[in-house]
Amino acid sequence: MPKSKKTKIILGIDPGIADTGFGIIKVEGNEFKIVTCGSIKTKAHQPTEDRLKIIYQDIQTLIKKYKPATAGVEQLFFAKNAKTAMVVGQARGVIMLTLAQANLSIKEFTPLQVKIGLTGYGQASKKQIQEVVKTILKLKTVPKPDDAADALAIAICAANI
Image: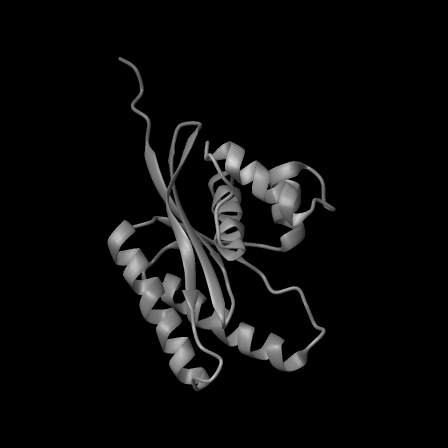
């Protein structure tokens, strides 16, 4: 009797305060398929706590609707602007808490790990990563916005661990 292919739903997240990219993929055996992707947008004029609440609620909604078992999240890596790093760190903290509350298996990746995981090359350009995502997911065009394409790349990395 042939083995049935186990289906896994994986949520990838590229944290941000203005734009949090998300991508959800379905994995059956060696087949990767896009379920959905997009970006959670918040407005700069809103108080930080309101922006964090929007991210929290939207991630919760995605989890309830698509029921992923695993989530991949990009780690922060920049330090040019301390204020920006702080608020993005707050967004990432809210995201991590939301995933933990849903009892998801969480896998974290640095941008370097994502580049190596998808292309085998640590200096791969954003365009190269997007083309690999398009190829793996058998898409006609590169996913938009860029944050969503990054989130799909993170989801693919999470599927391969």
